[in-house]
Amino acid sequence: LLLLFNFMKIKLISPAWPRDSFWANFRFQFPIISLSTVAALTPSVHEVEIIDENVEPLDTNAFADLVGITAMTPLAKRAYEIADTYRARGTKVVLGGYHPTWVSQEAAQHADAVCIGEAEGLWPQILADFAAGQLKPYYRSETRPTQWGYPHPRRDLLQSKPYFFKNTMQTTRGCPYDCEFCAVTTFYGRTYRSRPVEDVIAEVKSLEGAAGFVVFVDDNIIGNPAYAKELFRRLIPLRRKWVSHASINIVRDKELLALAAQSGCYGLLIGFESLSPANIREIGKAQNKVEEYKEAVKKIHDHGIGIDGSFIFGFDEDNPGVFERTVKFIKDVRMDAANLFTRTPFPGTRLYAKMETNGQIIDHDWSHYDLHHVVFRPRNMTPEELLQGIYDAYKGIYSLPSIIKRSWPWGRRTQVFVPMNFGVRKASRKAGYF
Ligand code: SF4
Image 1 (cartoon, rainbow, N blue to C red):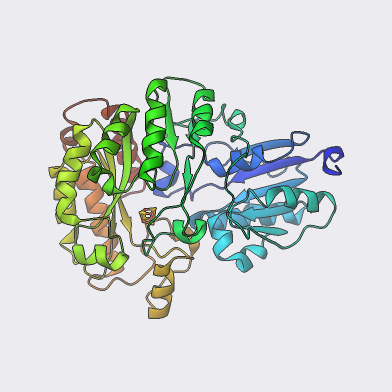
Image 2: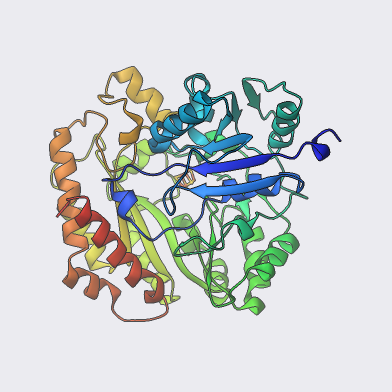
């Protein structure tokens, strides 16, 4: 009740990528759903503003009673700068998201409160404690929020912002797998939680711009195939277009793949990670069978679905020939787009613990943990060779002839992937890769 009579101005901030980085120049952006979800959890008596520094300027002189900042690891440095600026003027700051969750004591040096884990169960308490002048240094979610009954994200706060995709939403949280380098399962726990299909469909129906794409920012939208099939069946009559993340085993379930296509799936981000079975074993990604990759791409393409494949470089098995082999594969199968990442030990992952123990980490500047810098010592090449190999791979994949060849034959998937290819080409050239 106290809160109802304590009007507050709350700013929720997403920090900017470093200006010269690949990501700062990649204009294929969509809004971060965590901030619009936190906004929806805020009682309507308060005024909430979302500022995404990647698409608009942040005026730290503008007044706020309370500031909330979300931070992924590569954005932590900027998040701390913003937090320090506000706190120097006496404004209270709450830090949350993946990075503050993993290194909460570090984050606490820049915040009045650190939100550890998912915000749903914590944000109302943080607001109540702030209003009562009793903000605590740490708020930790002891249970995994079910998402049942939570309000839909406040998209109205994002509509004016220049995103390529406007509509992001989430149908599930977590992933049934636990790959060594990935923070998803350690953050969300070994649980895979789905929202009631009815609620998801109601949210999809409420989205503005029926012609626009929906980005399901799930970590693995097919983690529970029975749930995914029900969702896809219910999406068919809505005639939406959507993109999401999925694991490659979608191809082993014909019905699931067909339903995804019928329900309007235009593209899937899929982690191929490596063409070496030894590397796949090392990361514990048992659902990936390298010998099936080529056929898997064909099956997905045959359904009119494009693929943004993710590949990681710098495994212990990788030698300097890995770049050419991977580029050839991507071109041969006409993969619609590809992410070429350096192996990056994000805090909170098993990979980070392993590399710290081995003394392999050579760079602790979090702003370099952006999948485009080398922060560890690879086994079979120098850090410089690894980075140059990735730059050369970007050049090979995002040359104009390669974009044209991989996009052919033109179909519905090219609606998403041709602009994306030119977006990656531009960002990698601006970042100086080629
Ligand atoms: S399948 Fe993808 S989301 Fe799931 S643990 Fe592995 S990398 Fe993470």
